[in-house]
Image 1: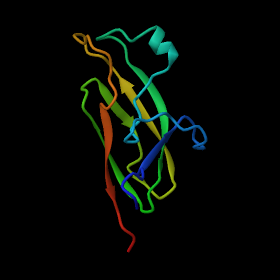
Image 2: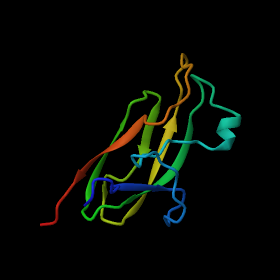
Image 3: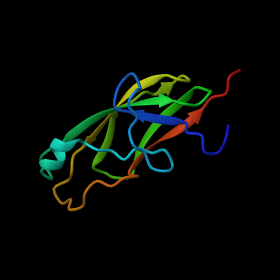
Image 4: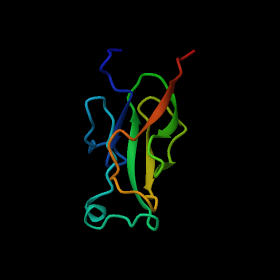
Length: 119
């Protein structure tokens, strides 16, 4: 495996035909769509969510453990485990706290990936 090979890739659709834009490290910057951009959630009141699909691009199975660096962002649905080539749904929820003044920024989440070798 080369050092720039991605472990996971992200898609708009469950068939993994429309890949989502990612940064140079292969991480997807969560977006909640044009409706949310036009009418952002009210801090302390609203929650918005979005769905993307993740595919295991590695040759081995892996366990996924979500982590977020932003207290107002949660990964509320995700696969615990993905086989090679398997695609699964990931659901994000953003509920800005009442005192929040900054927008959600890229790089605020990831999965800790535990890759299992085949025995």
